[in-house]
Amino acid sequence: MKFRLPKISLWPKFIKRSIPKTLWGRALLIIVLPVALMQFAVTWAFFDMHWETVTARLSEGLVGDIVWAVDAYEADPTTQNMTRISEQAQKAMQLSIVYQPHKALPERRRPNPWAALDRSLKRALQNQLDDPFWFDTTRYAGAVDIRVQVDGGVMRIIAPRERAFATRAHIFILWMGGATFFLTTISVLFIRNQVRAIERLARAAEAFGKGEDDPGFKPYGAAEVRAAAHAFLKMKARIQRHIEQRTTLLASVSHDLRTPLTRLKLELAMAPQDTATERMKQDVSEMAYMIDEYLAFARGEMQDTQDDVSINGLLAALNDSIERSGHKLKLSPLSEDVTISAREMGLQRALTNLIMNGFHHAKIVAVSAEVEVKATINKTGGPARLLHIYVDDDGPGIAPDKREDAMKAFSRLDESRNQNVKGVGLGLSIAHDIIRGHGGELVLDQSPLGGLRADIRLPVA
Image (cartoon, rainbow, N blue to C red; front, top):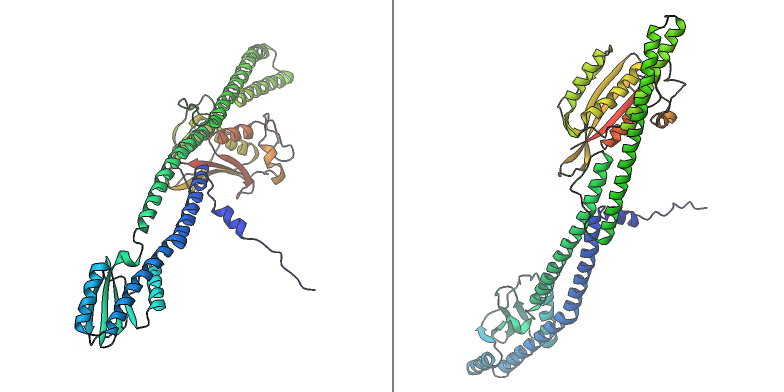
């Protein structure tokens, strides 16, 4: 029994990899490829069916005149006959014929880049002329040099190039190529204008996803693109209205709950201080903390403004804040500082949540940063760069199958990272939302310290 390997077709994979990935590239390919194929087909048909046929007929006619001159001279090989033949050939056939006594044919001939010209003329000479011959189509720009071996010497014929070849073929190609280039340029401009509308819609959607606004965005382009842009603007307005309503609602609830909580704090402060009173104070404090976290989660970072942020400056300010809270942070900043466009307060809140989450479950928390240079190209034409900010701890960590759930809102992991920690399960969720709002991602992994690593990945312009 023979073992046969499965057949794997590489051709579809090659085509898939070769096709442009962008809409602009594919639209351009749709226009240019059929035009190029049509140009090739028309040019091939023209040269194969028309140009070569005309050239062959012209070559045959020229060679027929040469055969007449050779036969006429060989019938009467005298000087007077040669003079008469030359005069008739010059007058009636535009041929310059000179008899060179005691000469031999050249041994070499320079090749012609247009081999089809030489093939046509050589075929006609071989078919009609019995005497040895030599020709050159490259020495003179407007003439063809043909030499025939006759008795006693060589008969040299200089013929106009138009008599041997169809010399106006390039005019046809020039007109066809010029017209195609002109029409293709117009098509490219129209396609570019339509693709630009889609690109602007994509940029507006990306900016909205990062919490930014593009006031200059207006629907334009084809009807379908305008319809998509209008639908995006309506969706954007609904989402913004929903966020504002949610924020207003929770702000009102927070304000309304703070008042009775404040009264409870005052009453507990004035009440006799015993164990029950202390427990009630602790419950009231946790309730206030929960309200603050709910409100922070609802508001997100929509009110923060986008600005250029120095990463080393941000990490230094974060280290000072952590030290004032009574913790010691191991900080490793970038060797060469980079600046990214971000909402500084939001990014600082996300890092603070991750760092404090580490201190709640571990003794050592380390923050480091590095810049990864990607193989892809960014919008400015340079190599794309990705900023990594690592938050590592030596705590119990999170099991790999629960890391995704840990970043969901109100998710609390009871087995490992929930010992004696107050909260409502919003720390990682808030950090995750903030980082995604900056166009990045938060990845949880195993830390070199033995605990959990939070890898914050942000694009660098």
